[in-house]
Image 1 (tube, one colour):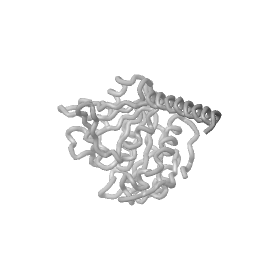
Image 2 (cartoon, rainbow, N blue to C red):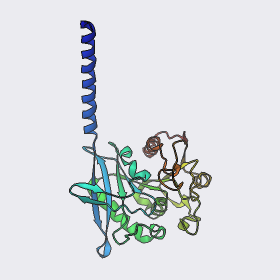
Image 3 (tube, rainbow, N blue to C red):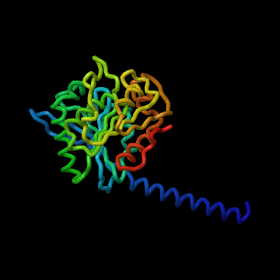
Image 4 (cartoon, rainbow, N blue to C red):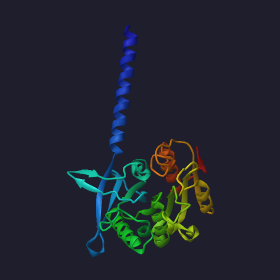
Length: 276
């Protein structure tokens, strides 16, 4: 290698090192911190939520999230390490994509007196609204003048529907992802004939057009979303149970564009009618 080639190689390497260091600094500066927060409820009970926010920022929005299934996260902290269940759930695994200078997330666990998690009936109950009111009050004390956005996925949309209705004055917006749009007697029956037009905050529905879960067909969700915002999602990959998180039902492989579209809608930006 001649002298000129050697100089060029060293210069390129130096530039690469500077770029790598700059990327490292930016990444460290953008690091998100998490904590498990416990809120006291009536009769000696409590409810926990996982608060995720970017270090050194003051978020404008807190996304209050309800995962699917029974929603039992079993949040705990031991020796500084957070443990939790349902890590594969769309909202849980995508929380780092949601969090930035503008957004923080609060993923809500089931209350201590519901060890089996949320039943569908509990998600539709007055008690559920009372519990989440305590959570919102706690978040307000911690984060100040923030706007709350309610987000549910799959069976968590029973929560986003009823809490959106009962606590309408507390939400800036409500987002339903993978909505239970065709409830049955055994699953999501509380949503039968639910009137989404009765929810006062603005609403966004996000649904995969190939969702194979029998409770969540796209055409039914499209019908319920009339008069509101709807994002149709295509692509990604699907494996396992069609009603689980790694199927189209959980936007597997499409997490990033789905999250960006939701955030864009919340702040009032242009939103695609379809994500391909």
